Image (cartoon, rainbow, N blue to C red; front, side, top):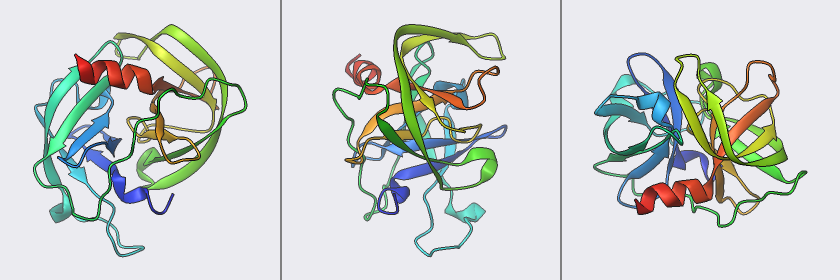
Length: 194
């Protein structure tokens, strides 16, 4: 987790914070569409190298929105210059579907930056639909993970034991506070091919 934390960014918009995963050496970052929506650019902050140092405004880099899939709630953004020590996180294929598989989650819940939690996959759901409070309807293959994930984690990675991204943390149902939904890696690969 310590090794991969610099590859998980803090995304800053005028209205919210989110998470993202560096997936390519050219500075491409994977996140949720709902964090960006219609914004053409967002701020991105990499974890400071010095342990315990809080990020400051001058740490923020501008990222341009490259591609979005509002239905699957996925998006790609890109920074012009990726820090040399930041390594992309590989996308797993296929993701785990078996209940009981563990995933590691890195993100920024409620602004608690670069926090880590572990979750357990409860179920795989194909072509699952969900709706956010803004009324927008989404549909994708997801894994349901038992873990206390909240706003600020969304857009960040769910990782397997090899450190590969198996899903993008996306949503937690109001009536299930300990369940989080992750859009699976094949959905990410499909978006990147389109």
